Image 1 (tube, rainbow, N blue to C red):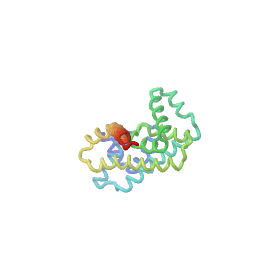
Image 2 (tube, rainbow, N blue to C red; image 1 turned 90 degrees about the horizontal axis):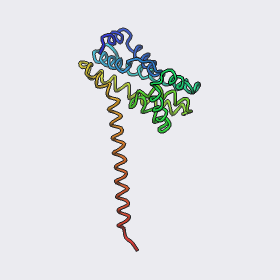
Image 3 (spheres, rainbow, N blue to C red; image 1 turned 180 degrees about the horizontal axis):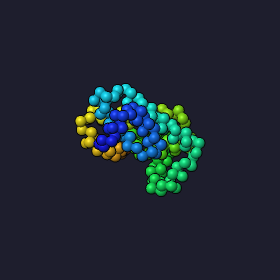
Length: 208
């Protein structure tokens, strides 16, 4: 991990973490996950308080998501302008739209930690699509708690191996997606087996 990140966290503490989370939820390219790892390491060293790090980082993320949601509600075409300026983002925006269309508020929940790269786009889309503010807030807050707890916890638990942990964390979202897909396929297979057994039982049952 870059020494510059450690210096920033050492100098500005929880305020840097909160602001970085806020801005990253609005498409500003900030290495927020690495900053949270550093924050967890400083907690382990006794330089920062765990409660302050978790709470303020979590609140910063929620504030950023809320801002994106309300921007989307007031300006439904904001992502079309983003895609027009940066065409490479169009596939990500389309995936975010599909996630909200298929999953609604649960899509918001998953976008904060399971498929985090979609998160900022999902916030805008949730607002533009008219998803209820209460449902958005509830599932967003729950998901951000997982995201913050995961990275701060990693930094705390492996503070002496942050370089390795940073590399692992970079691949964590891909691993989680693969695990979710595997779980979904397993559940589908289980349902198919149950249906096959039910049909077999019906065909061999008593006849008049």
